[in-house]
Amino acid sequence: MSKYNFYYDESEHSRKINYKTVSASNYYDNFVTMIVGWSAEKNDILQQHAAFETRYTDRKDRNGEIKSTMFPQKQFKYGFASLNKQNTQFLNDFLSLFDEDIHIYFSVSSKIEYLVLQLFQGYRNSFLIDADLMKYSITKALVVYRPHEIIKCLYGSPEDFLEELKRFFQDRIEYNKNNPELKQAETMAFQDILLVLDEISDVPELDWDYHMSFDGFNKYLQEKDIQNYSLIIDKEGESEEESKTLKSAREIGLNNSDEANSTDHPGLRMADMMAGIISKLLKGLCDSLRYQSLDESINKKILDVGWFCLNEFQLELYKKLYRLICECQPAWYKSYSGIYSDDLVVFNALLNFMNHFESVEQLRANIDMQGEYFNAFACGQLARYFDQRRCKLPIEPVIPLDEESYLNQRGGKIYFDSRKQRLLPLHKGSQIFDVLSVGVDQKFTPTVTILKNGESECFRLPNELSEWACSVIGMAAMGMNLFPAKVIFSNVNERYYADIL
Image (tube, rainbow, N blue to C red; front, top):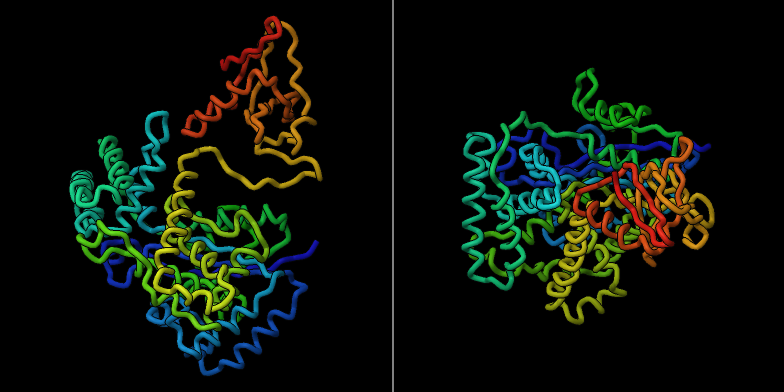
């Protein structure tokens, strides 16, 4: 079994989240983590990287390293279009170091979402309240509008936070009446939020939590079936104590993790550069699409035409980054985020949008309209993501067990062709089963996973129970998961019934 070496670094880090952090002019809401890695047998990557750094010796900092801090954010004001010729060539050479054998995993986490999750940790999904969508809407409102009085309230007078938050949403609803057609969905979301904001707990001590990004990487390793690995984390400062980052990685279960200095590991410098590229693109998009005034916020925000004034080399950079992020080493958990991930969705939309152009001439043929076209495309991606957030069913990648089946989350064997699934033996009368989960396939064929002799086993249910299966799945989608539970299945005159005990 091959061993894999992985390297971790981060960008837009805030060691402490406080009012000074959040209100700073250069503050960016998302914390970006990056992990790159490859098989230990792949020796050529380090040789190529050494040659790359030799070629750009003049870019090294006082520690003799080439890091992403060499790029000022203004170089990404319009994404790759605002790069000068030298930096375009530099990024082209850097991205060329990566091939389809190199693993790239990254996470994008909203810092304000972390605060919202802490403040509303008592709220849970129920049949009447979709708490996840409420937290998403609150986070998005605070990120997009940046109301200073509310953010300041988080730290200065948390006891006033609720009233300030209510006042903010009430004011936004009133202001949205200036353009009700454009702001209809937002107004409805804010009205729903006002209905459930009736209590708030004390504000906890707020520091960044690193577990989420490592949780995603742990899932990535499982998805890729990588068991023999090492994870090197860029060391924080000169302290000899283990960092919170390393502790978090080990607490998640990444026991083969350690810290080291980036001066000693080129892989850490590669992770740093890739994290910097993605975070600067994310921040550039965010700055370009952020409302700059209250009056502006009731109008549609379009990406500036400067984003599309690309030359062939800059367009090729987007295509290279698209291949690395969207095509090479495809995986469900290649990117990871929390409830609020609009910036990540828009970033992926940008890569897909730019990649579909075959040439700069095609892009420039209608350049004044590209902002509108991108807006429509990105809004479609965001709407799809928002609809997914409504569903509380866990969506996991389907990992085949063999050519004709896979294992579901409860360990039951599911056939891709449901006709091969054994029918649950239901004799006349009633029988009680320990049901672990219920599902339906694309043809609405109902299935049930039961605990039988200490093992999970999946069966097909009679078609007459498909309506019942869809009902319990619908309840789970709204956050009311009824299983595991005992279920009475009855066969009365060849008519089937199911009752949850």
